[in-house]
Length: 234
Image (cartoon, rainbow, N blue to C red; front, side, top):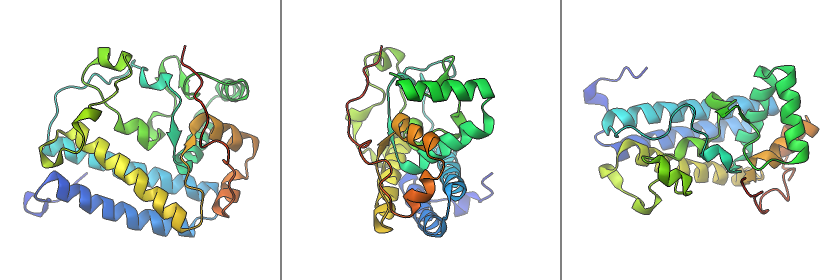
C-alpha cells in the first residue's frame, strides 16, 4: 500500500517511473551481486516483480485506461513461445516446484521433453504461475481481442508517448526499459543476460538443479537457447 501523501507523489508518470527505475536498478544490482544460489535468484526476481506490480497500480491511479481486453480465460498471448531474462526462468521453475501437484509437475516435464508450441506453464487455458509470470508477460496488453488474434498484442505503433500515454502503455514502456536495464547489470557482473526462450531454459533448469548456481558463476548454461526458430503455434 502506498502511504505517500499527494504532496509527496511524483509530479508526473515519467517522474514516478524514473524514481522506480532507479530504485529497481540499485536493488537488483545489490541483490544479484550477493546472490549465491537459485533460492537467492528466485527471491530477487520475485522482489523485482513486486516492484513492477506497485508501478502498475500507481500508473493506473495517475493515468486510468479504459478496460483492457486482457482478462482471465484469455490465453491468446500464451499461445506463443517467449524469451525472458534468465532470472524469470529460474523463478518460473521454482514456482512450479513449489506449487504444482505431482501430476501437473510431471506434465510440465513431459511437455518440455517433447516440445510444445505454446507456453509450457499454460494449463487449461490459464497461466499456472500467474503471480510469478515473467516481466514480458506483464507488459503486453490489448484493447481489442480481434487484434490479438491477428498477432497485434499491444499498441506498439504508438511508440514512446511520455506523460500523455495511458497507464497500460506507460507500464509496457517501463517494463521493457527495465528488462534492458537488468540485462546490462547482469552483463556488468559477468553473467549471461540472455534473453532465453522460457521453455528451453525451463528444460535446462529441470534437468540440472544446480544450473542457477552455474549461471551465477558466469556459466553460459543457456547458450544456444538465445536464438532459435519458434515452434509454430497450432
